[in-house]
Amino acid sequence: MKKIAFGLLILLPLSVLPALAASPIKPGISCTKLGQKRESGDKEFTCIKSGKKKVWSKGVVKKSGAASSSNSVPKSTNGSASETMHILGKDLRITPAAKLSKVEICKTTDQTPGGMSNGFPRPKELYRPAQDAKVLLIPLSFTDRPFRVTPINSNMVNSDLDLAKLALKYIEERFEELSAGRFRVKVELLPQDQWWNLDFPDSLRGGWGAWENMDELVRISNEKKPQFQFNDYDAYMFIASNYVGAYNAQANFKIAVKNSKTGFANIALMSGGLTQSSLYVHELFHSLFGLEDLYLSPDFGGPSVTISDYGTPAIWDIMSDNIPSLLNWSRFLMGWLRDTEVRCISDQSASTHYLTSFGNSAEPKLTLINLADGVTLAAEVRDNGNEKGLLIYTIDTYIQAGQGPIKTFNKLLSKGMKRSIYGWDISVLDADKDGVLFDVAKTDVDKYVAPTRKDTNVGSRPESPIPLTGGDLIRKSNSTAEISWNPSKYESYRIFVTGISDFQKVYFETGIVDSNANPLVVEIKGLVCGVDLRVMTYFFTKKGGQGESRTEEKILGRSQC
Ligand SMILES: [Zn+2]
Image (cartoon, rainbow, N blue to C red; front, side):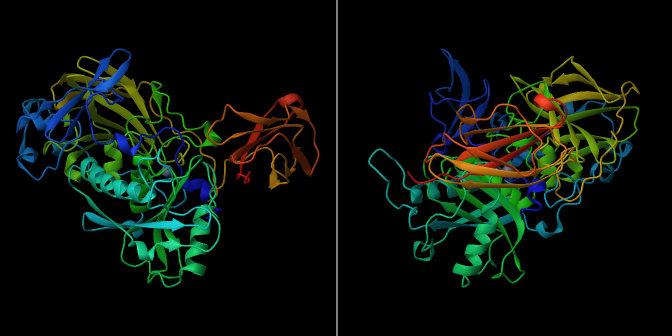
């Protein structure tokens, strides 16, 4: 696991997720996106401005029929909605499917090694002909961290058991919504008399960046729970008590375990963070479908939820941030978007398309332009005030998970607007409340040129000019620790320590130190107990922090106070 962990980044930033309690919509509760509409109960709510805040409106009682089809979070399409055709969808300018390329050409192959994949074919271990899955939630109790069936104190509303029950419902509902009823997840909670009550203290690592927990879960299952069988569920999600502080969430598929007929299991972990509703779903997308992380991992600049004009798909996909939303590319990967709903372009000089947003019609949902082997330009329809707009993004499967394999142009293209990218002009001709009519023209201006790709070994980091081994981090006392490295070809370094959930809080700082010592052993002082810490080491090829650099992050688990 550790060897390939880099290619399979499986964690989510700590601070960016909405609480479970926020999932039912109520008037006055804060929302994220002005104009967004959500259904709850028999009402439809709109995200409106109230003073400086964005909150859900009083809500209006839903009208039946057409009204629900304009909803941004569609309901199941079992009913007549799936037969809807729109007037713009009958426009004579639309290029017939027969004049487009075969969809296989746009099923771009994933070019990065490792289990998680952002392309085709999908990992064969996750092939699931029936459009449903079963997930088992397994509470973990340690001697010093029990899984609580009553709130820890009178200030708390929910016990761990309450949160697990809420999560169960949330997960099922979110899969239903995000797939528009095309995929169902059944979640079960292990009966209380079968919970994993362990006879030792908490052995899980807290915080973002600690990858060791999957190994630990496998060790626990092999050594302590040999009678447990990993046979009947598509994924097993372990949940440990919701302690205050840095939590850790991880997931992967095809993890080797002893007690399984196949020898493998798809496993996810929520060690704390039990109120982080979207995180359960994010982790299950790793375990059930092998989807990649779309946010930036710490090595590549951190979570990066900032909305820049071209960047990680922050608000558009749950693999990038807290929003329970999905790119249609993600749905295509999971088989939730049918081949007939995807329009593929390879070298057509001009074509016209009408797309609707996911889930509310039988019309196409995604236009893909094959730029090169492994690289695709995509367009799909998203909410843009009263009308719809076009979200344009690139899928570059040469880029690994955690390094930005998908990047979105975050300003939606609305009626009359044009964007030129990689030798293609995309112009929006018209838009209505459900879809967008647009032209795609080949220009040969600023054409996509495949960058020279460095060979990367399985799971290895990009080649560094500073060869490095070591990194042992030993806590000596509540306030001190020692880190040792075996670096070469460097002339200066810097080491500093921050909290895991608060990067602004700096506990220790060496500043830039000129040195070429090997081994390099540094005493770390000024630490505190009860807080998980992050030790950052920077090496530079030149003195004074100049030249090329290499960054390493290590996690120092909390000591008990
Ligand atoms: Zn993840």
